[in-house]
Image: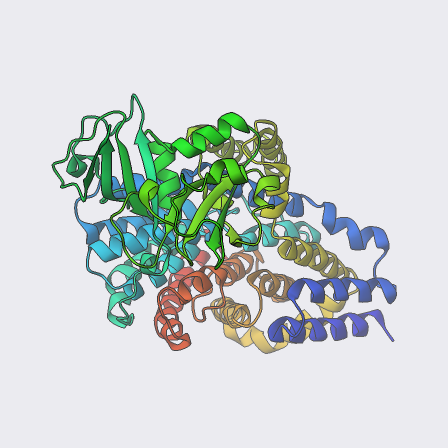
Length: 580
């Protein structure tokens, strides 16, 4: 059988598997690569070259650098700062969506959505806006921002990395901004003024579904809270923490009023969600006494776990101090969650069955908690160290600036930034490896090899020759529109990266056969593949699907209009910046 026939057959099989996801996309890609090797359609050197390509290294490094920003709380800090400076909650929600789009231009869409999700939910609740009216726009804003730079989404990077094999130059760092910025601006206007009329009203704030913990936090010398009243401190308004009790010396005041003035040495019993308590410890000048004692005894690496108190536990009916919890287990309890609301101080609470403890300690100690405490999960990733935020931002920003300006290749800039992040202990090697989305890496590396085989075998020439005869009557605008629509359709059942890599050689070959410059069609496919709005299958959309209580039809209704807006703006802008 001719190589061209074999390649086209594999192409059809891969297309079906990508669309149905009968196998995971990375497994399909590996199978495709294996078939190429077994059939002798590529050499081993060519097949494995993708795994060492600049594109794969850049992708892996950007996954790690995004985790560095998250670990240091940089993105969270941006959202909190915006909320603190705002006076109008409804206006703040719009400002947050714009900020999300801007941040997403340089970081992962999914990570940006995840970090801003509780912030946007809280702002919506204070503004009296149902979560269902705010969370879908959040996901869409993060996707819109991804079209602005070459690192905005992994799809952009994949397209850029695949272009040299087709004889085209890679995408410039800000090349997509010519169309990405207009698409993002018009898309945000759609989210501000049109989407609210289409979004469902299902009032379920995200934070109502999360565990609220009680924690005892002591105000240390130099704390920004010292001398402020509870109203002035903004503990509830800005930090999502409710003060249920305050202890000064031997006196305890329960449910202190907004005029209660905080002093150094006060121990505040606060109620809030895990990430709020941890963020407060980093920024407010408060400490957990039990945590301090633990760190003095064991300064090594620590983890955070949620553990539920089981029936028969020796802790039942006693306070944590009475049961000598820290001495007994070698770990500290930062906070406690109980389904029934209480105004009791954490130190005075008697443990009950079903209480959930937020426990901190070394991995060895946590692993020996025993049968009386059942571990629910590791929440270490929620910890933020804002003291390292400037350094994390400097490394990420430096890599982006140096790579974007072409001072050094982007791959070099991000790899060096990762090495410095590890050397400066902004992230552990284990966290770095865990941050990489390996299925995406495998998919990209394998498809780069398939793209080379598709081109070198002549299969691309045969297929594009057939397509050019069908599409020639449409003219350049019709061809751009057709490729855009087909790419959008493919991104619904399959991954964005796979859709882009499938369409790219077809677009370049068809444009060349018809005598057009391939560049505008490359840009059109990139924009179309990066903007997946019609179904909730995009990871950013999946994050808000449950909390917003959305249905599949909600995404079709709102996303179809946003897709149409993106389509129109792209068709108006692309030919003017990249002539046919």
